[in-house]
Image (tube, rainbow, N blue to C red; front, side):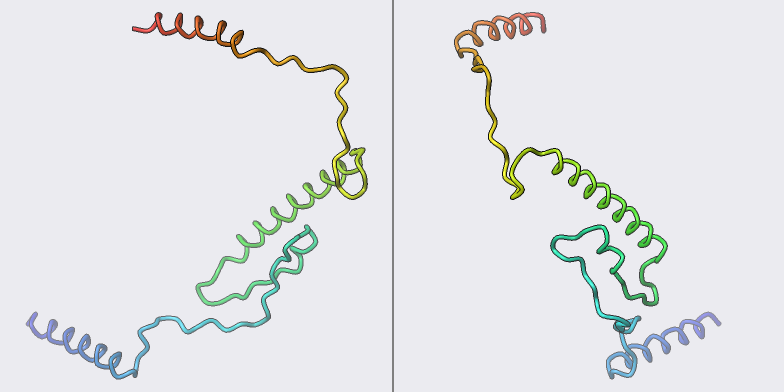
Length: 134
């Protein structure tokens, strides 16, 4: 009796394979997506307000809209805070309005230790640390 079951399964598998080979049945389970609106991508120099203009197509087994909306909200808030901070820093900068940096004046020369002096201090310390280890 079990052979009848296996025979039925074999017939179904052979019929499906023949239908795929003859082009009657598509091997792709999902059809290609259809676009409901044109893609509006972010510009090269995106601002927080540009995120409101983003739209994504939805499809069967597509993305979860609540997750994408949450990520876009976080991205928009982060961009807005960066833009605000950038405007604050730019307002405090004393450089020209073109974005160039203002020249820096040094009131006193900076003392740079000599290599020999540094080596005279560092080498004995390293040797002492090495002697402590087994």
